[in-house]
Image (tube, rainbow, N blue to C red; front, side):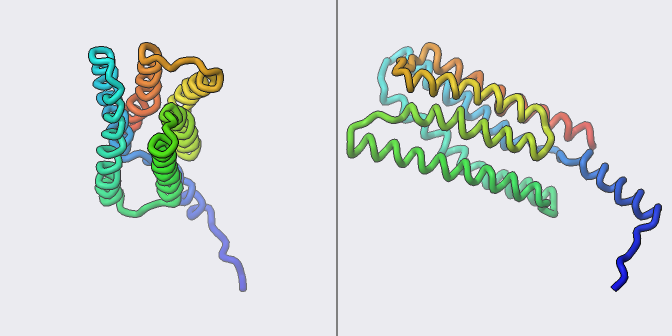
Length: 209
């Protein structure tokens, strides 16, 4: 069976369509999920930080679960709406979706382990959640940036990862994680990881309109 040869006109059309798809890889609202997680984490973190400073009551830390509950509920709803707007789901979309699904399941597993250690062994392992948030999440964001060729994801993820490495070193060296410096570090890391890239992506999407 003879292979179909692509003439000059067809090859130009293929190249043009590839350039167009690359140019329009962002649609209006693509950064909304990232922004939702960023502002949600920022608000809850600031509230916890203020309450800890005022009350010195560790019970306040249970409010961290609000991030997973609110974010975990809102994400699939927002993802469905964005998928409906885009129409066809590309292979890249599937890769990114699966990547963040792995992060989500890892978060559930990490939380479960911390709960079991606390309830059955009276071990406080919650600092592992900071390591998760600033190691696993940044690595996924960097991978996301590489797939999409988006530098704001890569730089944001890198800054978050550096913060996570600092925290991991402190935990390994048994240095106390005081709210006075951990909370600002955590908040700044999430601003660079989520809020800035989210606005950058939505800005680029508007330019393509």
